[in-house]
Image 1 (tube, rainbow, N blue to C red):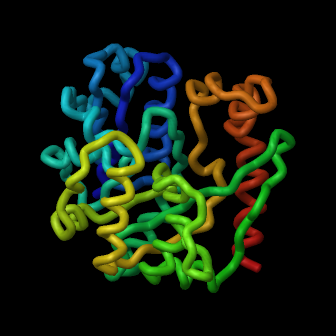
Image 2: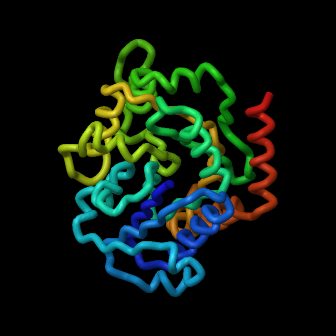
Length: 266
């Protein structure tokens, strides 16, 4: 079973839509799941928009989540409620698809030595042209070596020199699923601050203990930003809401998913 923990911070109709889309994706994927809404604003109106899934969602109010709301560890406060052996922690504005869940679970089912599966996605410009589509078998093999992953995430170049980077600059948080036992193995981070400091400690501890990761070169549209996130962003002073909404159109998603599959099978 996989437990999805969706952290909700804002009362917003677009966020409700995101939850509904994720639940639809899980139903379509056929995987067994537990869905937790981990909410620190106390709003339960979201049930009005997801009535068809009401019996499949657990609503948990937490007034302590703020201190644990780093992008990859926000689920720590919800651990007592987790029933699945896999965990996917996601934010309020990340939209997944059924293929996303199917492919990730295939890796866990086939590899006992893998503790985390990642996908950092690929950017698509305003004209829906894919940028940086990766089909590099060596990179995927390197990604299973913890030291190589650390270098890639935290900006250490081939000469051993630090690049200018944020602590969580390269960590693909939305596209990350991990084994529940990992938290028991490494413990929780000592730093409980918002954002990068806690991220850096948590993920560094995973890598320094040499727990293996696996990388799937998913394109970005397999987990898209919601309309809420889109409406708050701009490119060159222009609102990008329509751009992100375009990525949600089925025929566009299908077109580029097919392109990605063809590239990976070459």
